Length: 291
Image (cartoon, rainbow, N blue to C red; front, side, top):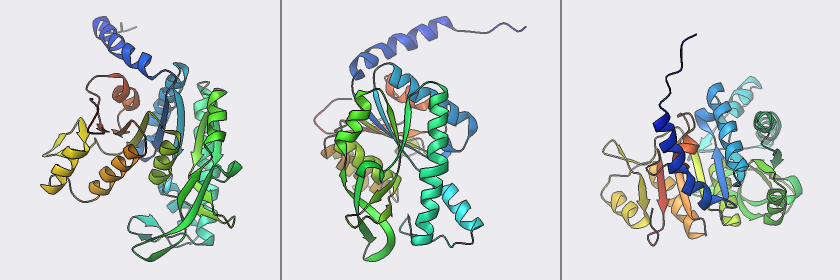
């Protein structure tokens, strides 16, 4: 049997570096938007389930909002339903909202919950319709109708806090109900932001398929609003990253302490970002606090 080559000094340094963060975040709430490769690669799905369970076991409240756009498109195609996007959002008619319900609130939500509970994470699967968890109004993009797509107007914070106080880990499929009790499809990024803002969460973490905010092929570790606007004005931050960054700072303005963009393609990226000094993604913070 080949002996394990373990650098004990490195392991010790990692644990010592993590200790002040563990102490700092005990009792705090993290909202994690779960999507991309971390949801489709089997190894990454397992390490994500392990990571969120570790966070809960050390006393951090975890709320997960998950996507699943790839699987929705695959099922819709199998059912001969057209998939159409308007400014990055899926047009959703009655047939498509049924697919979204089936895939997100059904299959994917329960698979995520089951895997987390394999590691004793106390996950509970929810859809935004449950106990009026998420309320929404129909939205449009630049005056273009998106069908049954919603923008969240209210979050049932009391319900979520009840679950968290009892040691559970809510895993939320991003659907919502309108005042007319019509089920609406909600963008997972926007749903995670709304939940984090309502809970005044310590952190909102976006697990994505990018390394973070990149400028001249280098990752920006920490980004303030003033620095972000400077980079946007200079053309260093461009394209689809501009609304992502501005949305993050809107979330900070609503009371969330920090927003992180983390590469979910890296194993244990969640722990590496939260419990190491440098991190592996980009953290966005208000101008008036330190890193």
